[in-house]
View 1 (cartoon, rainbow, N blue to C red):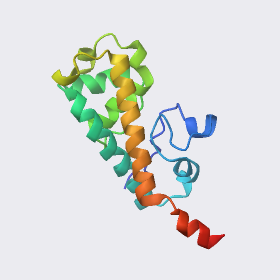
View 2 (cartoon, helix red, strand yellow):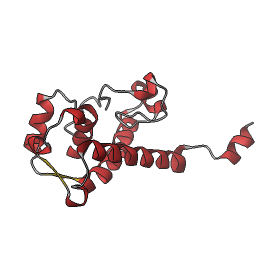
View 3 (tube, rainbow, N blue to C red):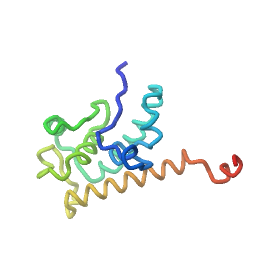
View 4 (cartoon, rainbow, N blue to C red):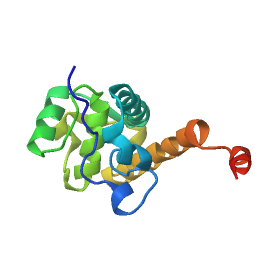
Length: 155
C-alpha cells in the first residue's frame, strides 16, 4: 500500500494563525498537528470526511466537464492533488490556491452550474469556503466536541 500523504496544500491557517480548522485542507488543528502519528486507518478516515464535505458543496456549484483538462491545469499551476481522491477535492485545491488568477474555469475543464452563474468566481469561492467550513464545524460539534455536561464532570 502507498504511504498516505498529507492533504496539506501549503496555506495552513492552523499553524500560522491558530484557526481550529485549516482554511486550506479543512482538517482540524489537532489532525494537522498529529498527522504523522496517525495510523493509515485514521488518516483515511480524515481524508474521507474532508472529501465528502468538499464533494457535497462543490458538486452542487461546479460541473466537471473534463477531468483531463483539470489534471493538466493543476499540473501546470503546480497545485498539489491526490489522484486517489475525488476530482472535486482537486477542484477545492485549485480554487484555494489559484482562484484569483483564474481567467476562465473552462481552461480547467469546469463550468459553473446554472443556479450559480450570477456569481463571480471570487464570490463563488467565498461561498464554497464558508459552507465547507460550516460543515466542518457542524461535524466537529456533533461528533468530536466534548459536551459541556461532560466537561463539568471532568472538572
